[in-house]
Image (cartoon, rainbow, N blue to C red):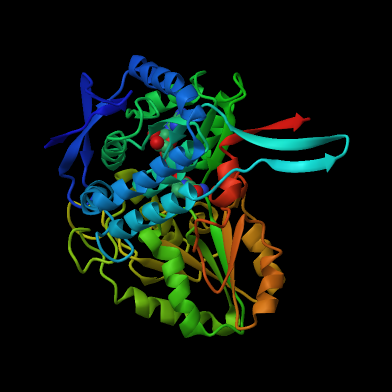
Length: 468
Ligand code: NAD
């Protein structure tokens, strides 16, 4: 079994205690996660603090070059990291699985490395000049979830480093190994202390978010944890970027083509087995085409295999962990008990793994748990509506506001409806497609701040206005 270490000040550090990391396809042990002590957390923060001035003052082109080399490292270790993600996360190696995640991590890293933060001239008159400068914040703490461990890790690390900050990352204890390996690889050429990694249980996570040595925390995960991080940032007024949960709604208008829409709706809902923040999680379909859309989506579901991620024909893998599996099961069971109609799936699959089939639930009401709560797994509720104002009202009746979508053959009509949705991103005839140059973030309880592109990079800076 492989042994992994913390990465502190450029060195691989062992711990006295370890925790097994399980493969969700068969519950076998993939490797052991080091359990960092709070002293080791302090060491990591101190290493990042010591490394900060030199990294901040490094020539900007040199920092850009090093950020590009991080992407080169991911490319050189593409298959090794992809296999490790599949082993600990469960997603297939092929299709839209772990190789796809690595490709995304590389693409985002290169796009972010290419960005510049020039001085903005606000005013220039014979009497003087006003400039806006962007400066790094200091030591950034990064806490990541278990659905895209490497890609989300890069979404945090690369802009933080590009802007001149140093970093301590703590991945989810459910998928820590690919991050530890990635940080170890990055440390082959980054200056010591610029990028550190610690792993541990939820107690370590709480100690990290309360640590006064961080100047900013960037967090991706659930809304409940995001609130705790916000509360523990009060004392030192840490800067925060919070990318939290979602319960994205899609509205299908009566003029949509059911067959064409079904394909996009299906992949929008089930990318990464539904374990995607901006996946389609509630679907509202007009009564005129409700049955046709249900039939088309069910036909797609019947042709895709859920199985172990290492098998080349698996399109979907297991649910990553037992708690999430139980949550999906409970929400579907509740829907069944309320009289909803299961179109496909609806029962766990046999075997040791956390396998749950793609499940489409029709004739379900707005107040069902599966509609109101984030399932974060392979089950989609499909609600029938008669009036589009009613659909918009139901879509907005959520404390979440990450993404949303409208499906129609009339794009300008769809845009008008999209404009009424309370969410940070909205798609027409698509759902969940994100790209490195387009800002992404949630409104309402789905988060604070933005990632990606210039807007995302600026989140890793503080401003200084210079009056000359
Ligand atoms: P989670 O909140 O349970 O865990 C996320 C991370 O927080 C883990 O590393 C965990 O160890 C850590 N953590 C736990 N307690 C903590 C504490 N008290 N202080 C600081 N950190 C703590 O989330 P998860 O189950 O790993 O991920 C699923 C959730 O993440 C879903 O709600 C999903 O929608 C959301 N998500 C959002 C985005 C986005 O960009 N908005 C992206 C991916 C996932």
